[in-house]
Length: 398
Image 1 (tube, rainbow, N blue to C red):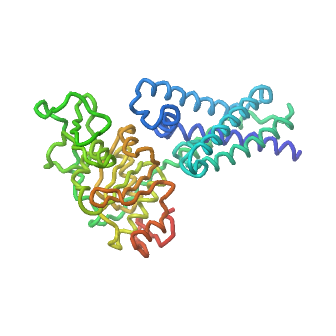
Image 2: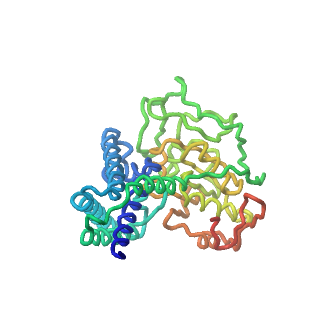
Image 3: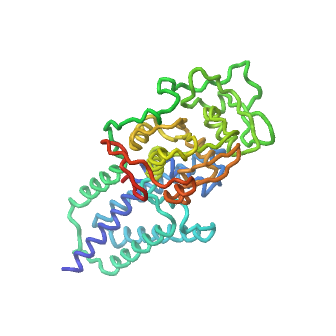
């Protein structure tokens, strides 16, 4: 009897893992597309549109296979003959790939996100390997122990699919509670000033095509054929952005080209913090909430955000930070955002000092205490208002 219960629990465990993995990837497809594309095509995959079609098709086949296996593990017909072997094969192949990634890159086992659960639950390669090894052990146990009488009820499959779907989608539930707003932290550019960056007129066209890789002191012009308009918080009275002047700093060039409103921050002079955040990334949300708590110290430099996502997601992003809102650009084109990341993982934080990058952080290197120590911040702001922050040093907003 005990063995039978273990067999059923093992089937449910494997099913949960595959269903959660598939649905997590579905709700973060742009991220997973980019991760697979970077693996197969290299860091500049966004410049290979034809190959990207096949990469996206492969991604959807992989996600569909995980979804089918997740459901099949709860079915009885052909369980030991077809379903278990297919499950173990997929686990072994992905584990071999994770080992390869771990050995082929510096800190390959502990840096980055393996993408197993999309952007919903980031895991590094080592964590994913351990997870897969546990799943393989469970699969081998089922292979050796399963008998025809160890069947699950027909009601288990639909119930499990519904519960796992609800569980996974719950990660994206957003709060609509009004958060207290600190007027000193509101963007200098009012929401009413949000407008579309003007595309170059016929008189402004200086070249026929956009130069993808910036060299020397060349001038790059974003034309209607190569660069769609993006929504930013550039003031309405600002001059239309029709050209991006190349500097000696490649990172700054990319920011100026794909988030042109950032030019108003004049990164060439003074000390500025530029943060690249994805609006649905839990690490980005937590990092920004922590930074907002540090601002009361007066020791953080001027902050500018480059946000990837939708306007709806951005409203939630600022709301969860207690109403804290810095100057920002909203980027809705993932390849453009990926270009600005330059192969790094978000959140990416850049400290500019007189046009040079003095320090940078990403999801692997950012740590709240060390970040505060770098800027000489001893404690963060505490807010007791409903919906605001109530953070102390070392605390998480969740």
